[in-house]
Amino acid sequence: MTKIIAVANQKGGVGKTTTCVNLSAFLALMGKKVLAVDIDPQGNCSSGFGIDKSKLKASIYSVLAGDCAAGNAVIPTLIKNLEILPSNIDLAGAEVELVGLDERERVLKKALNPLRNVYDYILIDCPPSLGLLTVNALTAADAILIPIQGEFYALEGLSQLMNTIKLAKKHLNPALDVEGVVLTMYDQRSRLVQSVTEEIHKFFGKKVFHVRIPRNVRLGEAPSYGLPIALFEPKSTGSIAYKQLAEEFLARNNDNYTRLGDLGRLKYRGKP
Image 1 (cartoon, helix red, strand yellow):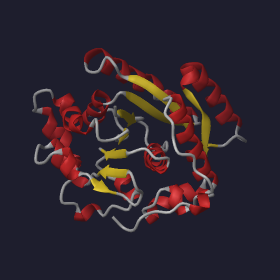
Image 2: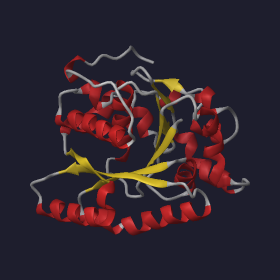
Image 3: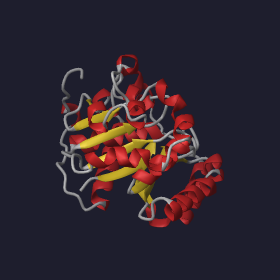
């Protein structure tokens, strides 16, 4: 049975898209059939997989607008077992259009339901806001994965995010759970980061993943080449961290997987 994960945080620049792209990639490399869903109008998740957004025949906007089925908008990525439901700037007006629809919070859920038995995991990359698109993701998801940067401002938005999750559970999706919290752009030398990390652990307890994603130049460079870090620089500290995150994620879900050997030997199929 497919598990749908919304990767969400209303604060921008916390590594949300980076986490969605690279966790999806490693899950697929470990033998899982994965779909990444990009519901951010900026389309950064799509760019991260090398998708030319200007040439899309169909996108997540087409799906939400009712112009095509989700399965018909899915396209392959460079990694076997990993596909993407891409986004482009057309999605920018979707929130306004959704407002007038009946059950507007459940449009994405209805669209993804036919794909529930096709994939092992569906990861939804949400916009950096708590608007209607993110609410649709929380309604469709089984759980939410929260990337948090180790800085003071990250703590300020936590109460707002948790309140939104609470409201979504109460009114739209009673089964919604917090999959976990991922500490990103982590600098263990900073006392402030250590202090914030302690507060996050107090707030979320065991929900915080043991693996911490470090600041890594290669992670920032990979999207400009349209490659996840596993293919761009497989031996970098960022790549190793996301591999370990995928392993911990699957272990928490009691899901067996194919162990990766030498990351330097990772292969990918040609352009999609």
